Amino acid sequence: MKLGTVFLVAGMMFASAGVAQADQEWAQGVSDTQKAAAQKKLEEGNGLFIKQNYSEALKAYQAAVAEWDHPAIRFNIVRCYIQLDKPVEASDNLQKALKYGAAPLEEAVYTEALSYQKLLANQIAEIEINCTQDGAKVTLDGETLIAKCPGTEKRRVLAGQHGVITTKEGFLPQNVEVVLVGGKTEKVETKLVPLTKAAKVVHRWPTWIPWVVFGGGAVVAGFGGFFKAQGFSQMSDFDKAVSSRCQTNGCDLATETDLKRMHDRAKTYDNVGTVVLSIGAVGVVAGGVMLVMNRGKTVYEQPTEKRGGMDARIDYVPHDGGGVLTFSGQF
Image 1: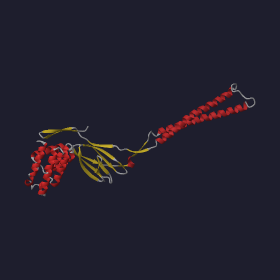
Image 2 (image 1 turned 90 degrees about the vertical axis):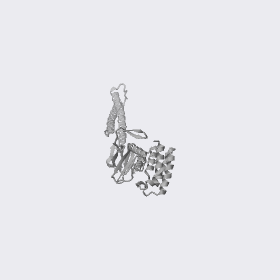
Image 3 (image 1 turned 30 degrees about the horizontal axis):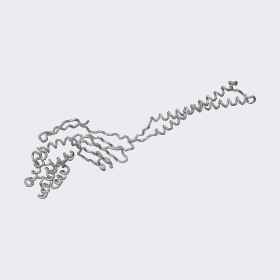
Image 4 (image 1 turned 30 degrees about the vertical axis):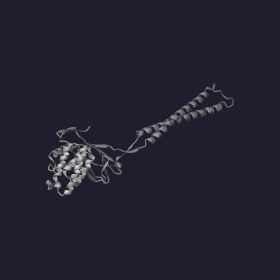
């Protein structure tokens, strides 16, 4: 049966159903005026649907069910949502279309509705979130689900991966990635940890490294100071020897070998002390900088929890003389 034909049949069936179905549950409390208004909007929607103007057709059908919530019109809404790639909305309306079973629907339409029911069941899952901590907020895929806990909420969503984030001031946010399987319900219990318990102090390097650099530099600088002191002492001895021996007639260091050795030794100690002291100073400065850079930083680990999962499967749903083959799974 062609798509357009299904809708026209649904329209004709609905047009003649007002009297025959007057005592039926879906017709109770509906006036003839409401039925006529619903019929007019139904026909308008059928025309728009045939022209593939699904958004406007949907509006017309919604206006029709506002007058009379007839299962045949609900099924037309289902078809619009499927064409608009909104399976969750299609599934919600299909439940209402099938509320009274086959009685209000033409046989072919009812058969097709059952096929859609099976097809959508593999695409739609349900998530139930329970939040017990006062004042917490829960979002599902970025949209607020529970504005203020405690509370429990259920939501029908597409099968696949979804993100549940729970937040509260003074607590570490909880991020849960849930993989939902079509036709099944996944329950999520939220639990927040206070920041005081989740805090962790980390350092850029192990704490001993800066102290080793700083302490090593200080020790080297100490040796440098020792050599400088030796050089100063040796030079003082040299100056005293020169003053005592050479005050009257003067001295020539080329001939006074012992004085020359004293002078050279004093200069060597002084030069070595300068080099070693410089190296030590660099170590002290570097260690001090590392100590500043290595100060503890408080961080809060926020691991992402993963739940749920699905196995690959293939489903076949009969449809319009053929069928629809679907493949679902987690990759």
